[in-house]
Length: 228
Image (tube, rainbow, N blue to C red; front, side, top):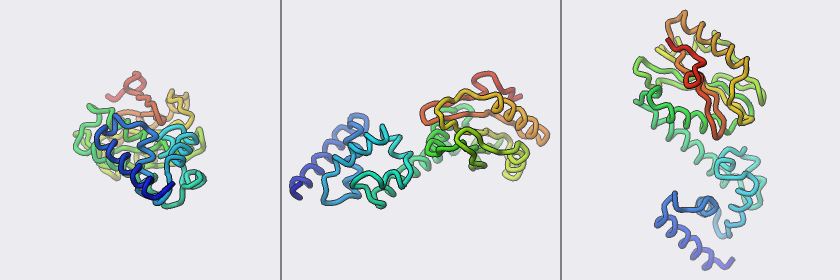
């Protein structure tokens, strides 16, 4: 593409975004506009189309591994790093939104954060959210990484971590890479074991959530956890 035509197209793309905003801007145009800031002197429309073709949607693009992004023709490490950085910024943004918020009264914020945090992993991950007496988040960490359908973590380890952080209550969250968030028998037994281990320390298990990229299952909402 001629350089002047390329620059003119990019400027029109930016102007359209300013007028339409995110809600009125098509997905492929958003990807194309983002790529203009890291790929110079090249028509990025074919790259944007190939990214969406290969990874289905923006969520799939952002969850892709660095090497997978670099396999797309026209995508170098610099461009791929920008996409990964953007994803991590989104996670940090959602993390900040939870601060000084009663996450029990506003469970959607926690679910959005958990889905974003864990969706990129192809294996099951277990995350611990520690809360103070006001149900504000005082810490979160990933405790273990397992296989595609199994994560290894011991209830006692969760209790020790919660005690170390001086938590009044905790929420455990793990992902199901398959996308199906219904709990297994093992998930239910594990939840009861964690609740019992925490109860002896006077720390409450406030919920166990299972998340995928697009869905979330709460043990409390489905009556599977007695939080008293």
